[in-house]
Image (cartoon, rainbow, N blue to C red; front, side):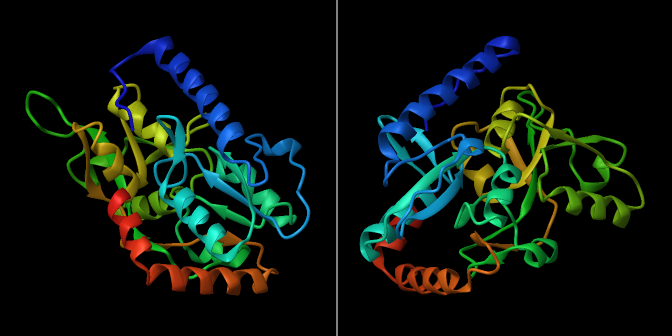
Length: 275
């Protein structure tokens, strides 16, 4: 990923808008299997045996790199598509809640996002077998002079404001953490940014902190070395792909495909590339 220069104010937001437009052009050009639509509100489901998959914009999901699209899940899906001769139709998104309603009504087959495997989510959606283990961390900016961080412990968050993408599944964990510590954490949900954009806004000094998963934070720390993600807010959690709970046949097929691919050398190469 290209490193962004530190920018502030309106220029920061204009840069994100420009980046979104560039990514949209990449999707139109590169995600045609048989096509893609980054705006799912007008989504038309393709016919035949095409899998309709929504992937979150992020280095874990899909992102623009040079003149192509990349991302751990994006590359993994393309490998599965080629191996099993199953066409895929990819939709990129920033907010998972927009996609979950399309999953529930059968418009989408699979949603791939930064969503931990919790009891609440399992009660509403079907899951593949876990692909990765992750945990929630607090991302904040390390002081360049003192090399210290604003929130050195969990207790530092009592009475403070913590930032999340809107409708983040991490909200419940923060509420429970506050109860465990006998205090209150003010939770502010950002209505415009997904997890990746929120981390970058922390790196640029626009947002004081963000709660995200540790794998995504580690990837972005390569570009922004002053980011700190040492404060862990949860134990290890499994991450899977989401399905409509009624579509057990598709879930079983994807589970078998993933089990087979995870035992291959290509999967090892893929994980070494991103992790």
